[in-house]
Length: 465
Image (cartoon, rainbow, N blue to C red):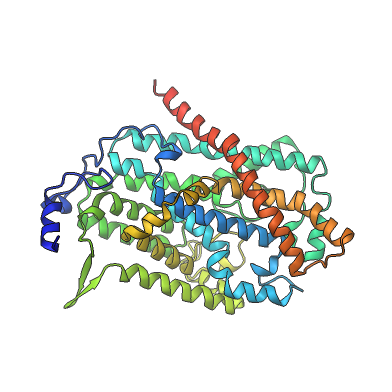
């Protein structure tokens, strides 16, 4: 079929392959208040089986990378942290060659934040109905609170039951403070206050009581962002159906740039929201090989996200080779207190969004959204299965490795004669705990995470009927 025939066939189609309504003619540039799908089955919340497959597959890759990052952060910190003293030389080589893209830590967290924006209000963008704004707003606290509260309770039980008895031994031998046992709560009030801080903290502090209690210490700040940013997105998503294309582009671009300059995580989440709107409303109107006009040239659209991705990769490897300068880019934001550059970012214990992570994540997701082949590969069932384990991996893997892992580490070093920081010790721990953590994450996902999803949908239905 010729390109002209393909364009003519598209003109007469009512829906695309996803069953989304196709905009015709001038509708592309006008307001879009009508639903793009008549399917109402997602109005009270998506089940796992109705999620977007390629986004679940991308989440699955991030889940595996998160598991690897947690493993190295606990058992071989020199691979992911340039400040660890006495780390073997091979860990520095792995850190510079593989860590920037595979288990960097900050990159995976940033990608999750971008996906929060991409999927949090997807049903509303499809349906354009008020219930699809009210639903996520109501369900979000229950969806995050139940798994997080249980993870904190399990950690508390292990601390009380001496489950971290060998953690300090491992932390001392690896020069790794992140493997130290968490201090027990002073009271029940402290537990509930810490849990509340994970949701209502004014900023994602990496040294708050709850964040340092969940193992490994300092990574669970993402819960604050995942919870709060939904309510930021709702304000902007509500206006999208009633804004013409031109001002959507101008408004969202201005908002993203402003958020980036003041160093807010809405920089990532609003970008994800903009990409979701593009995917639902406008992607199906593009030519199979879309191009944009720049001056007198017609440039393939995919070159723009590809350029972002490559520039981001360049910076990731630059900072891996020069770790002493890696945090200097955090200064390039406005300090809302001093109205100057944010020199305080180097001293504050806050998770701050990074430019290099943004370029890599947005470039990669843009390439995926423009490539049918990439979406098909990411829809592979094993990847989508791993995607459902992502939250459970983040909550349980560090707990298992710091508690049970420290016991195994002690036995390897003291009873079997392994060296404290040798590659063979790391290899044995890897083949024991990576599969074990996947199994435990699956169990936690089925018993806790799935229950939280069901409970959030049930309660939303209950309060409406």
